[in-house]
Length: 338
View 1 (spheres, rainbow, N blue to C red):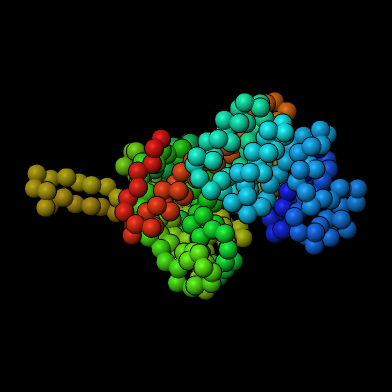
View 2 (cartoon, rainbow, N blue to C red):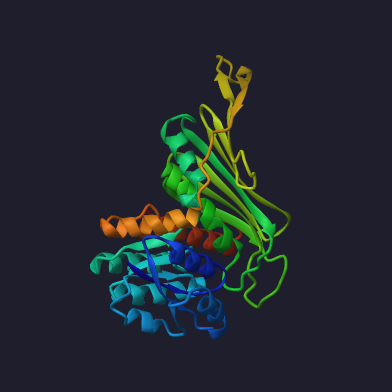
């Protein structure tokens, strides 16, 4: 199948490379409104057509799929045009700027019988796949909490705040691995460094409450002197730590927890701590984006939604949207409509 990539900036370059080297895809076209961004694709991918006009792609009946890697506020219009042109559509995260837009794209994709895929790349990493297997096998027990830290120095975005930039990664991991349904979100943050007239938050803390009374906490920051990519998942039986900065032992499972010994007098209730062994499972070494490109192709071939379909994108956008409302109201909890 033939695919075109719209947006040849930082992430678009990775998409171009993976589609070009794929055994399943033929990279047909590269598109960017900035002609300067097309110089590299023209040199690196001979035979691939380059254009500054996305309409050229939508009008080309030979193009089967479109991958969109542009600023968030352009996702909806480009994805809508691609879907209405009958193209299977891949959209960089987050899917859209609002849940209303996401719902409209889902309805359009169903109407035109095309796949809507969201580029939640972490879901295609061997580490996250392994985490899902561990949880589904019941090794951790009931999931009590999800605690993530995703911080670094930059890159400052000019179209979205730090929550919309960094949190989609960990929200999508939570949704894929646990399937928990959120009921409310509260978020606090600050635009500590003022670099645009939009007053975008560069550090934020977000808490998501789920229908089973468990919680998810997300710390995102563009102003950290160190780069941290860590998730702690607390279970009733065991606990798991995913450290994406570790070159080898990315996942560690701890046989740790607490047990409650109740007595008649509530003030004498004893909390006992259990500290057991640590185990680090072996993980395959595969490039996530290459796996994702293949999965996108295979899903189209059998007309089956991808594991990061438009529904997954909507899940993430609903939480981001609620977090944005909470941010503007000093952390007041915002209910999510499921």
